[in-house]
Image 1 (cartoon, rainbow, N blue to C red):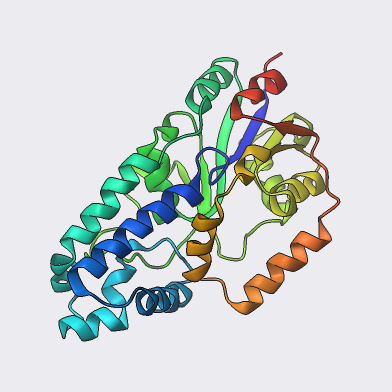
Image 2 (cartoon, one colour):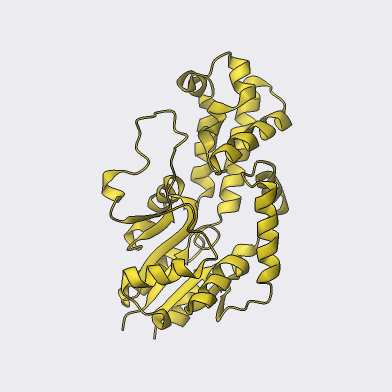
Length: 281
């Protein structure tokens, strides 16, 4: 019987918090350089837009900030984008430098695939973000499917740009907004779709409260990517200042942390490469 690896993406295959906080900081600095608008006014405006769309990873949210619309005297996204070209360029350049896989990820995925392990990705990020990152990092060569949340909008200034390209429609499995961790039904549905039993399935993720508790409840082999918890306070603080989370979301997260504080994974990873010791006979 073949084995199935379901892998989380953010902070399991790459350091999402480091990449996005650093890239956003570059964007913010670029906007300030162009406009001189107070940093905290910008952060507050970003938070409002992020909460509107329930998504913090929207670089083009800049085009909807009240402070920038007032500064430029227009809400025309294309005009604002042109004025902020240097800021978006700085974001892209920093993203190019910081969006990197953890050491050993590609080599491990390559070896697992060569040994007949079926690999799929699962993330709570919206498909407009997760598909971009997966393809940019070459993960689409190893993931049979990418299970990701379906979004209803993109912040891209070109309204005609599709959220997903036609070539990705079969590879990407778009989950409804309600299908979020730590619902064990998610994992069971993936096992059923991929045709692999729970006993031969391994779920790897960095969150005890969400990933490990969900995997344990579903009866699959839980694998904790504990290295994904190494987070710089400054990076985390910046993300908190622009988070799309509401007060209710924060309370829910705190509740989950308390409920599942005693959960234990079947396996622990010091690096992603350790999966080879677990999955390769």
